[in-house]
Length: 331
Image (cartoon, one colour):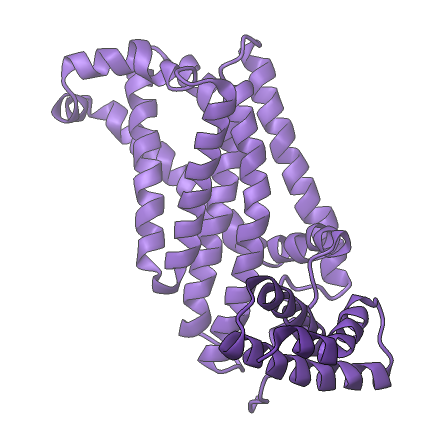
């Protein structure tokens, strides 16, 4: 096949398709023309690939067809408006809608952590059974505090952020099974309670709370939100309500993804506090105060922006357009 002759014969159609897919708006006739040209150019690309595979021409036609396919399929790209709407409607509405789940999860975990810590303090022999005297001494005198300063702040912030995002993602991903979420929460509160009890037993309670509270209040809140989201995912197929189990699970799964995306930002804030505020030379009251302010800001966001978004009809789920068709079910 003479490639130059083939290009000259069809270049006008290719340029026309390229012009149409670059337009912001299409009339009905132009949309029909895009569909027609898409089919023709797809045939042209197939011919070029089989008879005269010129890499540059193949790449250009493939790119143009991909853009045309987006237009014909109705795919839309993420815009600043979409991102703004996510943080003003979707994410806060989801947090507000599930507020009693994560508030209850938080209260149960905090109370359980203090009960376990008190039990460890009342039974100091457990400490010696779990750790050697040298290990206890090292934890109390250096390891616990050094954890926050052994890496550069920026590197430490990234490490903390990725770890917390991973834990939250596990809570949501394993939520469909229920039990793994409870296990992850149990491991978390057990480690915190044990560390707190050991440092308190050796007169370092001030150090423990002075280092754990500045970032820990917001960080643990985010983890509890993730855990509650996972448990709601589990409950969605146990008790689907008027919907089928698949519909209920799909709706909660989409909302869970909204929560996961939003928590990336929340955990980023807590990671910055942990890296730059927790180990800083600020007085303990100031460091804890920053953590309290961050938590108040988060709760204010939930109970103002979230409530307003819920009143506007936002649920935390994607729009009906993006969710796809759903078959009606009997009430």
